[in-house]
Length: 501
Image 1 (tube, rainbow, N blue to C red):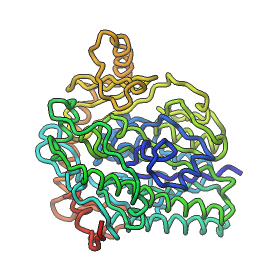
Image 2 (tube, helix red, strand yellow):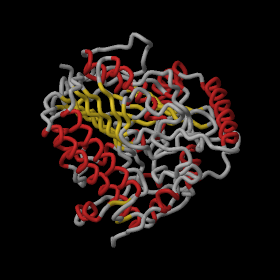
Image 3 (cartoon, rainbow, N blue to C red):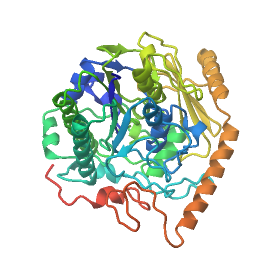
């Protein structure tokens, strides 16, 4: 029988914050056990450091610039197959519990069953406007200043629900006469900001020596152009948080990881109880990372390592205990899942994909390039990234280039772009970017897409508003959604019980 696949995804978790990636503070014993028995990919990147686009590229095995998933309000076309479609065609039952952030009327994209609602509006509420960025309602400083202990929150309620339904689904499949192998994706919202956790997990770090950021906050003139725009967008440009506020936010972030670890333990324990553990491949990752105060930056949307590098652990089948040094990215997951289902080295007969089956990448291939892009708010032109070997190159028609020796300078303090000693490397990586992307053509497509979606949104606000959100009755007010008009009020409003920190 084909192996089952349990795919666990979390939100905004940087690899460097896990013990299995070298963090001395993190308390996550279940993830540590999973890592000790599986393959840990040392250098794994998301392909777009933003929630919805990252998930769209991951699901389809294709970069967002190719499928039109340009931002957090861009529709993933129903005509593009996802790993759920491919696996279902291969004989799998497919189910999703938790967040996926699909935009548009297709809220399944190959999943036979969705076990929970989502957290985000499925319409075009959050479409950017490159023509006039103006004032935006996105991430803001309150996520840091209100950090600490919280007994209940919308995010805690949601992830509790996600776990409950996922566990119930595993038991239901064990009792079912449906003998197809299963693909179950369990997708959490933690440790995404705001940085809050329950006291039990806060207390795990009572005596922990939580470090401050390795690179402290920088003045505006020392930031690259994109960082300065992001910080301005967040209302954080030249803001200096007190060390105590930073440490509180970081402690709550670690607490959220420990909370997730408990949930992951419940999932794995359930596999054991129903006798499915031995024939199940478990995959764990995040949609993107988290800056968590490095360089004075928070959240994501940049190509610095904390924002871009994600954990990737695969346990079961060909993925035995060990460390994989070959660079990987989330577009590799679709062909990897299909390699589990159909045999190592699987390739699509439908179309070329941007990823490869990672079972074929367990031997060291240090020069394998990985790509990422950013096409959303706080920019007026596409931004591209390529990592090859020890170097990372960031290119945009609107900004000066960035070149970092990530091996020799892991904190990316020194921009090597324009240095004669690194001219050859810069030229080689720039050529890879220009070969893969047409920036001018892509910009035209993005601007047209934004204009179209804003018109559709404006029209939808006249009269009866269409509702695409999964499992929502017409006219219903569903408390889960993170806000169709205000990004953060959702998170801050529903904090009825706050403990002492």
